[in-house]
Image 1 (cartoon, rainbow over the protein chains, first blue to last red):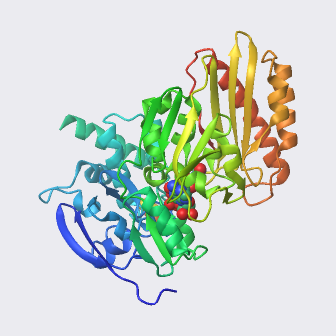
Image 2 (cartoon, chains in turn brown, red):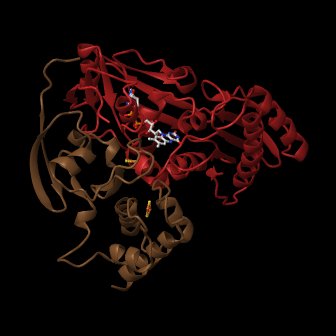
Image 3 (cartoon, rainbow over the protein chains, first blue to last red):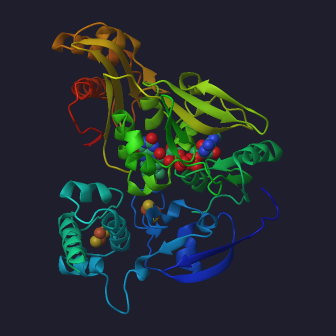
Length: 162
Length: 296
Ligand SMILES: Cc1cc2nc3c(=O)[nH]c(=O)nc-3n(C[C@H](O)[C@H](O)[C@H](O)COP(=O)(O)OP(=O)(O)OC[C@H]3O[C@@H](n4cnc5c(N)ncnc54)[C@H](O)[C@@H]3O)c2cc1C
Ligand code: FES
Ligand code: FES
């Protein structure tokens, strides 16, 4: 084991806010988000790249933040679930998950909403098949997914209509 | 879960990354991290030094030139999935679009996948049905290795300790040639139980050439040579397909695990070959057929 591990200085933007920090190389991105920045909306479910509860957007792309080192986010723009709302108004995706009962315990929900955000940024009118593919990396143990599908369809409609 | 502590280095070029490997000795490269980071978190991999390739400019690209497609080592699965250039070879699109889930595809790279040589990895299975060369780089000079020589064993490649993958070069199949890749899995974020890659080159009704590979049913992807021979020079009929399937099952060498028993996987591999032949044949005739990963 190396004796002295140098910390690494990184700069990144999280939900529009710039941060400069020094991190240990082995710090995971999800730890940076939850512990260093105290944004606890990003969850840890499996910690093994399976469940998607830790999903955030990194430069617009959905990633599992339990499987990215914090140092790799140097220079990146991150969006976490806290960054979805605007001026105290819920994002259409958040609103749709509520209105369509797309959640029960809510543990999976932040990750699912960010996977949805990537999908809808690339595809304004996804088919059911495309939605299923886009959220295949997100596990929900409560809902049985039907209302999540409805919520995503509802969100697509409301974003398109806006 | 925290990995063991390590020193972090950011390479400015692939050449520099290779020289860091020889300088540090106990070092690993970090590409998409979708195999390495989970292994480090479980402390199966405990490198003292990590050399990050992600900040090197110009390592992620898909180019078509003089009859080949060139993939930069750091090209993500998602970029290949979205690429119209790569989409010209349908079997490549089948593969890229089916690996794991959106999040893993956004990070994982083609170079990292081949270097990892996971027996259940999709890329090697698909790319050995095409003529594929791996460009390998050391701090001094580089070389090209045929993919079939590059993959030596489970998790073992021809790379020297101070050598890395810089580019993957795939020959564009001739006119009248098309393929299909089918992988059967329980859910998206897991490796397949078995998979089959089939590339057929048709001359009218006759199969001029066939390349068939099986994935996840051996220590490496398996080229099913007898299955290929059963189709080569023949019409693609129920009878020749059955012979190819039989030969594919015979060459499968699976291990029993939580994904299925030996017999189950052998049967499954054969059935995937059957379906993949059908799709490849129809695609070779110009039909648009969707294919890819199949969920249980
Ligand atoms: C939940 C989950 C499901 C998955 N399912 C599948 C699946 O269905 N099919 C599939 O094929 N894969 C699957 N994967 C693996 C995924 O495709 C990985 O991205 C891939 O195997 C490794 O690529 P990487 O870029 O992430 O490499 P890394 O994890 O960064 O590296 C892997 C290894 O290769 C070395 N390496 C990386 N780049 C190079 C290079 N250029 N030259 C030399 N060595 C290099 C590293 O040092 C390391 O030892 C899955 C992964 C996860 C987490
Ligand atoms: S906590 Fe990251 S995928 Fe489950
Ligand atoms: S709402 Fe409970 S896990 Fe999805």
